[in-house]
Image (cartoon, rainbow, N blue to C red; front, side, top):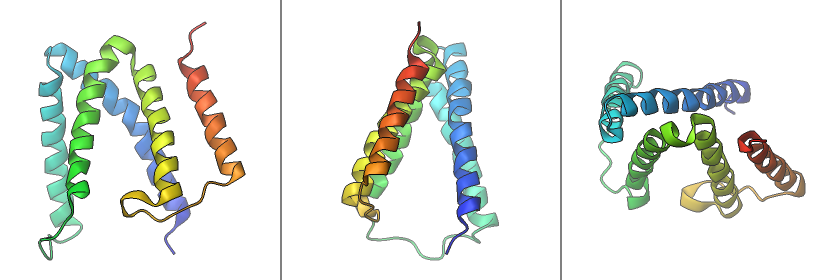
Length: 148
């Protein structure tokens, strides 16, 4: 079994990084008046880090996948959509508001993916305590973006 404490800490750090990435990307996009340019810089840096990780940590690609389904390639389209959207919207709507609504979208999609085992994910039935937790988190998102 994988170490849940390690995974929890890693995902916590990832969550902390998302608003930071959004703010940096939004500032870069605003500075150059181009969300697409900011996204290109972000993706170039991400590509370089990913390639370095591939060879330094994983010792390269052992086999080339030849039968990967379309949804897995679509993941890259969702990353591009997220980066371009947050880079364009955050300067106008606020980083906090943008990320809060991203979080709300994540809550909705995670519930559907877990409940139905979509996209190859393991199925985790929604229990009453889990559902109540999602409701409280959704209320928290609402309270976080509500002004006044």
